[in-house]
Image 1: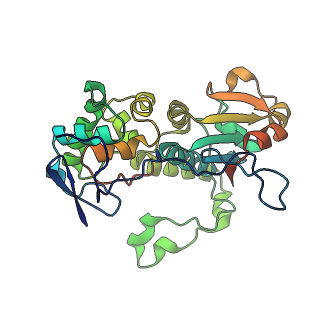
Image 2: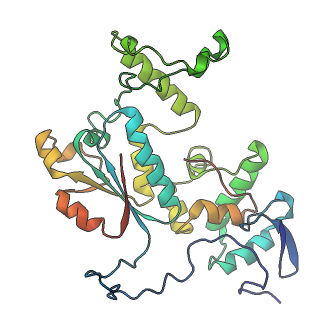
Image 3: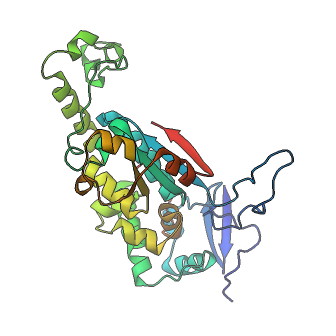
Length: 104
Length: 205
């Protein structure tokens, strides 16, 4: 367990750096985190994060890309375009959620 | 003051964007004739089976690899060709014949240990058993929100997979190009695939 501090905002993370407390997230913090990985958090980038936070709040799990497509209505192609490389992990991190564990 | 550099002591996930290994292309290890591959991580899956339960492993692992930013190639050969053949890829089947791990979680209600008892192989040969088994497996997959094969292909295609079809199998099975999933990039020879798979970790299914 570790506590990160960025621009005066603190949040608890696991060994890998994923959030452990959902409520320590704020949109301002997400903007600052996004800057660390070279993402500018415009509305298009923010929409999937907000869906993830809501879904995780309802279901208790970080949604997978598949769920973001079937339940959230996001296109897989768009998510890869917005967050190239490791989309599910990047989005989970920026949304202040634990690492996604689903296989599909 | 806001910052865009990572503060000291800050723990964050590895998104794979950090500088790649510094191996120089073209530098051979002593005694080796060919230079070591030093590009980004690649995985190549070879799908050689057309049973429903044998179609999923490569698709699931390939999808996971794509989500990790890995370059993924899938080569469909022999019966595996059915996975990308739109004429029958929604109709792949599961048979319990030859599968000694065929036991049913539902049987637990009959008594302790029943869920681990293998079904007698002879049962698999009875008419209708393959269709019942297929239905059951599809139901279990659906419960886990695993898409059917055609939709799964669409999903990994959107995620940027590279799909290839084996020329020999394609000719043997008299397939026509129009029946292949649109994500298939080419009908290629085995040696073409070996070239494409340079530096890849190869998984044979």
